[in-house]
Amino acid sequence: MRTQPLCDALGVEVSGLDLSRPLTPAEQDELRAAYRRHRLLLFRGQAVAVEDHVRMVRCLGPVREDDNGIGYVSNVRPGGFVPEGRLFFHSDFAFTAEPCLGISLYALDVPAGCPTVWANAARAAAVLAPDVRAAVTGADALHLFDLRLQRGDVRYREDELPDDRLAPRWIHPVLMRHPDTGEEVLYVSQMQTDRVLGADRSLLECLLETLYDDSNTYAHDWSVGDIVVWDNVALQHARPVPPPAAPRTLHRVAIGERTIFDLVPEFAAYVAGRDGASS
Image (cartoon, rainbow, N blue to C red; front, side, top):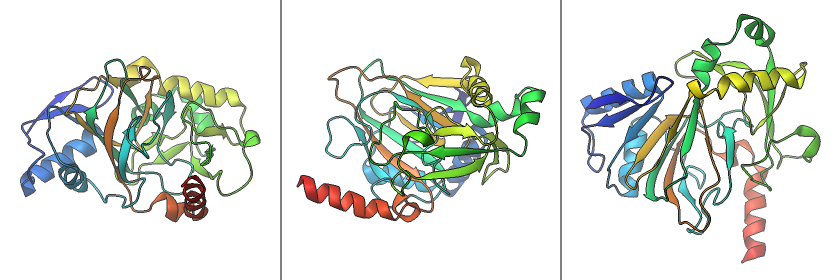
């Protein structure tokens, strides 16, 4: 197994592994060490089945066993996640008590001109200006989402959402400790963070400027056969608007102990009622 840095901010390209076969214990150890250190791993030119993709991800953590754990980001496949439109930067399920630990995508059909972009929230925490760090030390931020709307091109705001369980919200420390590494992570996002509690919104905008500075991001232009797996706590992801009418499908596997249905119990009944009404 060999690694090559993707940029100064985050990530490595991994070569020398065929993910269509089970990895040896030594290869699994190397993979876990690289993932922990670099936070994003890119494998090019892979030809894998769904079970191969899942097996690789299981080397890095528990796979979420629900529709939000194993599925497709697609504009042509029925039930595909986020089929259209831009995605603002975010960390998946930051609006719950237990955000996803990691995410992996495998490119099955991808057009040119629709990269995924990642920002390194751990690196951003480390480079905060001293006065900004002082302002957010010990501070919390409110994160929220509307599970009925489920749009990625919205900056969610508490005063615009209904006050119920289908608009879940959660408070996390602005400088959150990573559950695995213990390092500080700047845990605010463009999409899901309403505000830093007790502070003017200008403080949030200042934090986002640091987080999404060009020096702190990596953009990946997908090719068929690419697999990317990333740490969803240390990194955030975004995408521009995909090309119109171009088919786009990526297989998605999420890492985490609890599903969205565990964390927001009302969502299961909502989905069942919605699907029953549309059948």
